[in-house]
Amino acid sequence: MPTSLDLDAALRRFDVAAAEAVVSGRRLLLGLTGAPGAGKSTLAERLVDRARAAHGPAAAVVVPMDGFHLANALLIDRGSRDRKGAPDTFDDAGFAALLVRVREQGDLEAGRGDGRTVYAPRFDREHDESIGSAVSVPTACPVVVVEGNYLLVADGAWPDAARCLDEVWHLTLPETQRHERLIARHVAHGMDHDAARAWALGPDEANAVLIEAAGTRADVVVAVD
Image (tube, rainbow, N blue to C red):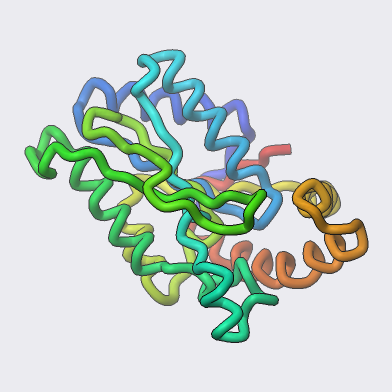
């Protein structure tokens, strides 16, 4: 069973793990997952800021799973554009392969990796497309926070990605609050309110059911409210 923590306790846990990574030379890869709107990106940035404040500006970086969204043109060809965000609309194998590189690159104590910077894509919400090589992961960076919906899903290549992570936190937020955040996010990126609500309670919610079920595999459940 996962360990249940409130946000303050989770932050303290992270501080200890980040400090250990800095001292040991073995990179910490921390996964953050949770349903759409649970606050993964916000917490990921908060954790990175904490690590940088404690250990220097090069101490931490976020690698987002969303950078591996398949292109809209490909989704249209496949007839799955209206399900964008579902597990099969991502390059899960590409994501797993990148995390293998990030894992090996950062294990400085083990002497693995070739010393080269790893570059990851990120998702541009304004243009609704991924941008390749937009996130730089230097060899000497001791903390990498990986955030995304499907880190704990048992199908496809998602388990290969999960095996690269030292720990995965599943974030929870009251459903009403989560829905409100999602609707506001969709409106901010160009949807009218009715379309935003329909997407949040339709495709987003279908994905949320899968993510919540997979959350039982987490190491830690964090209540972010």
